[in-house]
Image (tube, rainbow, N blue to C red; front, side):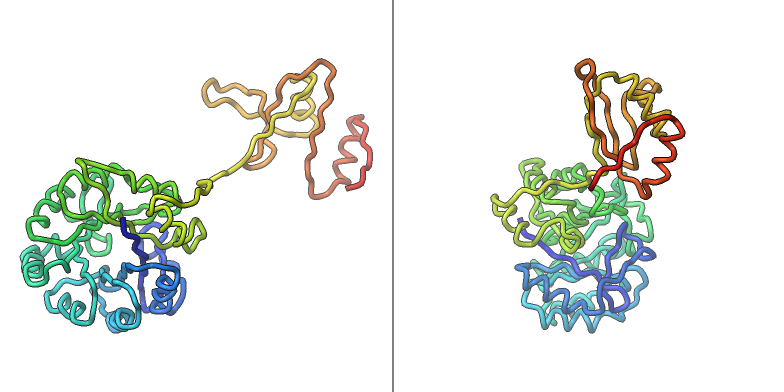
Length: 341
């Protein structure tokens, strides 16, 4: 499975799109060519370049920049975004683009895609941005097409495209897993190579994509970007995984912790922590009654468990200012003592 690195270009800048919407675009730098070259320096051999202005607005302001990127980058470059004429597709090919990615055109002008496939074998990729119900979105995710994944893939496979690139609209690459169901459906529909776009959260997602199989077929590639720059894994680690080796990393996403505390009397400890310390007991979502779990802070919990009779337990709570707490305990008749840190 090949690894593609993405460079999104909007207004001449490299950007990332947390959920795909251009109104959420976050600038990364003002040097997309340098970003592409940096990917190559890390070991990337395939680049996926997306012209967001052209895709969403038909604005071709980034075209010269992309031509320069192709010329100055030592990698196989496939170009996507607003390529809706034969002349423009052939211009990119003449400038050295490895492949041309057609998205909206595959819905709105299929005859042109047929002609391009016939005139440029092994050059035309069809990108399908899929909503959860498998409807295809067009024009940079801004419009609904009324067409669906299976029918469009069958039509474009007949045209002779070299590969399909499938992504899910609105997915956050750092938070949401790939939509394995949609990818499996696409694999089962045609025999052409399929590239998973939209990124992966971690190395485990990458392994699952490698293992994904439907109708005896597997993915031909995966596009990454934001997850690498966010430090989830490196290009070197990704290549190791794709080679069937590779490191393992904990998937992350830990939002809190619960500590078990053995006490001599659960009831007395609960009363003290609730009435004196002011910590709240959590209610069970199943039965709606308070249990033996205390909420200390967001994501931090203590579960009290019964220990030996008369057992003492030590619980350390960090506070911003200790003096008001001493006064509070003193007013309730609770003895305190100063200790060194």
